[in-house]
Structure formats: structure tokens, C-alpha cells
Length: 111
Length: 114
View 1 (cartoon, chains in turn purple, cyan):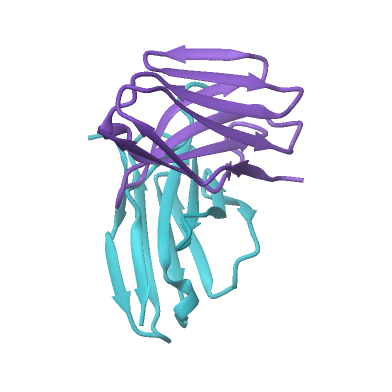
View 2 (cartoon, each protein chain N blue to C red; view 1 turned 60 degrees about the horizontal axis):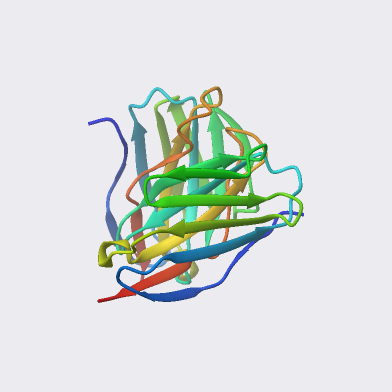
């Protein structure tokens, strides 16, 4: 079946690292994405990872994929107040197919 | 600017009315989508079109009718609006042969039915 789960809230101090976790059920998922949604705005693609990769790093962002456990995480280093937003994990089986989203994790960064 | 643009950004209407939301992308993508985000921020796909052909039609009331006049446009028409239709509707697009850019979303249309 198709199901993506995330914890709903995360609160961190400015300068700390944030880790947002996601689990998914569809073992045939090929593409996994992280999107950011700021208040009143659309979804901005942050990063993506293919299922044949374990890790991807992009500046302050590190994505880890444990395909055996169907677990995806997004680590944000040196979290800033501008990182406060809702972060969505999403999966698709093929490019062009429907994205299945998690419920979103609301990240709150305190100064 | 290259983007996915949707209009209007806000739509307030009475129950029973019919309304349309328009979406256009100039990214050269061949697939377009409509997603609904409810009050709990949950995002669910409604429809997907590839080169003007409907390929995904999730369990959506038939009061919702998508129309794709060409691969750069995907409009959503809603008949007999109900209170439960209040949500933010996002248009998105992707390129099936492009593995690098994911899906690009519009900024959303906030529909409020009163």
C-alpha cells in the first residue's frame, strides 16, 4: 500500500541541527523528495534522492535513506530562523507518477 | 519567469456556485497535476494529465472536472460547490523523462466556500 508517515512537530534552537524523519511503506518507491512549505506559500523542492542511493548532501542539507527499513531523514545543519516551515516527505514509484506525501513536519526554530 | 502559475490566488464563493481555477506552466513539462491541501495541511493528488491525456483520477467527486487544452495548461472546474471543498488547491508539473528536477508546484489557490 501507499503510506508516508512523519512526526508532526519539531522544535530546535537556532544554530542546532534539525533531523526530520519519514517512513514509507511502498517498497517499489524509486524517487523520494523533501519539500518545504512556508506559510501561505506553495511547495518548494529542497532535495531528492533515488532509491539506489544511501545518502545525498547538498550544502546544509543531508538526506539519509535506509531502504531496508523504508526510512528517510533530512538533516539541516546550523538551523536558522528562516528554516521555520513545514517539511514534507514524498515518494513516487516513477517520475511522472503521483507523489504520495507525508503529513508534514512543522519545524519551529527558536532564537 | 519560468514557473507554474495559478489563478486566482484566493477565491471566496457561496455554496452551490460553480468556479474554475486556471493553471499554466512554461517549463516545457509534459505532465500536470492538481493536488488538494486540507486544513490539516495534508496533500492528496486529485488528477494528473500527461500530454493532455488524463492518467490519474483519484476518488474525487464528479463535481470536479479537469480540462487540459494543451500540455501547458490544466484547469479545474468545480460545480455545485460545498463547504467541504474549502481547501488550498495546488497545481504542479513534471517532466517524465527528466530525472533531475522533481515536481514544480504553483503557489496555490485558497478556496473558501461560505
